Length: 292
Image (cartoon, rainbow, N blue to C red; front, side):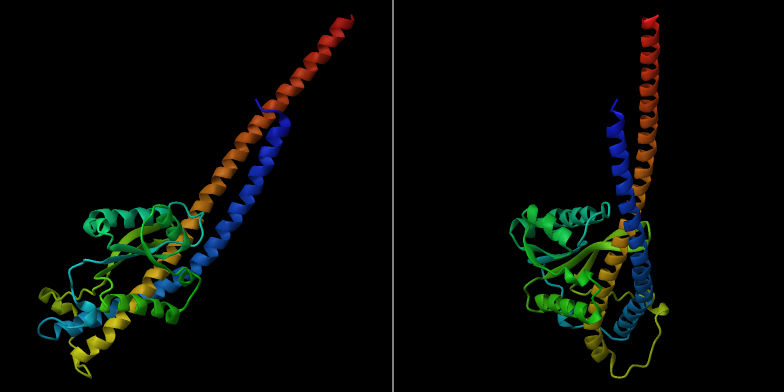
């Protein structure tokens, strides 16, 4: 059994760690509230925009011809990976990387073997893990996670759309954590480009037949890029909110573990102290008996 001084030092160290994890938990909870409000306000707008585009398409005859909807053979593929810039958020980052690599080694195995599959990292942790494993990284943009607004994220979305229209990549997909609640994040693999516009006649009834000005075709041409920008913006907001939720949960568990460890160490300390006192009493009694 460790001596009393060693146990006291360990107890003090764990208490210091508990203060840090507890403070980080409160900070993450405060940031989570703000991020949650943003994504909750954003989703209805994004969903309604998608409904409008589908309604526009259903009012037309035939397929929509738009450069961003051209479904080409996916010879060159880009996977955009959304992680975090900081750690201490449990399995948040590792789960995204596993999902992205699983996608690369299953759906795009041929492109990976030919060297035609690349990753774009949003978040330093993702870039670090992909670089260490030797995967091809097309680019990085970690500043988008630092509270950037819609205009900055739109520039990034324009960059991705340029990749597609210039045929630098034939397929672009996103892998990120979608925010459900403070303790639940769902891993999402979402197709970004080409934009899929489903035209299911069975769903016509749920869309309103609006009177459009100008014509539906012109509106779709102008709304498709905006829809893609909204999709990128929503994905980043989802990832940020999920990160704060994962960090709050991880720090809560770390604080609970610290409390359990302090109780266990305190019990060991009391037992060691009791044993030391008993030994001293026995030594005193033994010495007194020897003097008789």
